[in-house]
Image 1 (cartoon, rainbow, N blue to C red):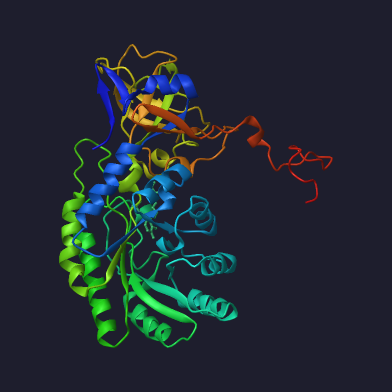
Image 2 (cartoon, rainbow, N blue to C red):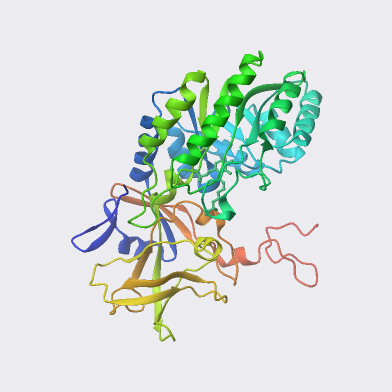
Length: 428
Ligand code: LLP
């Protein structure tokens, strides 16, 4: 459920008309609903209330500071995948013991930052990485809390680009090796094995892969505990899908929670979840204005002022995002909705039902854009990244200003070596 609804034919974000947001802040603009984020987080919290849990929101889905802060107030922990995301969590004032660090390519500086920062644990993805963590911890004269990410070889049945739990994927350690590695870690003085974890993919729309992965994780943990290797956590990752289409029915958080309680509950460990999309995906829309209609061979094009540089999901994953007008009218025409980018892949929606009368300047909303939207934006084609606005009841405020044109050349140097932006020191 979200708070982007029509009221008397006008599309609202909570209690603010989206056309008013477009008017005030321009387009393209991402609009987030605080009430929707709250709802998604509290529904998930309630779904796993039968377990001792740590919900670590995956910052990668949407790393805006205001969103991190809002979730922190709701009691969320955070999953960072880079030193940059760690710094964002710290900037947002998140308590360090509610932060974990994942990622297949952690570098020395990131490990050091995490250890010095005193985060809950690092989720390691290979023996090589664990050797480095041990080395750094030794130099810092501390014991590094680590979790091993298992690759359980479970098919998440999602888009291949966002499937991560198969043997052929780069993530984690195969189950058999993970057990052996856990025993090795347990014997290292500078490492403290605090748990085992997995993440099998994203936008998963059936329960079975989660049940499968959880069952494997339960087995692994049970064996290790039996061997006297004390664990505190078992991580099950993120991945719960959301309905992008009205007829999509991913598992309800309640069903997901019940499965976890049933399978992982008996372990008596703290269950760590890393949800991203399910919290913010349907809590955001991307507002755009129509540039013009243009005749096309198959059907007319509707050219809008946002494209793949703002929302990469449609071209990258062939992802579907509903596109709706800000003012309700009969959907009596079909368009291929395209952006201004010089790529044929810059297709935001194919065969989209919209009013035939739709005209330059009209506002449309691309739905389900709160996750993996702004965070994947680029400045391709000399485009400034969009503004981000948070709505909370009847208040709408900017949580990230649209890039200025100076962003397009910040850090660049003229041919004669002088900095294009005087704030950049000319010493590089
Ligand atoms: N934990 C780990 C270790 C992850 O790699 C991910 C997502 C998550 C948690 C959060 O997964 P979620 O609950 O959001 O499904 N850009 C793609 C999605 C990439 C997901 C990467 N990992 C997209 O737009 O669909």
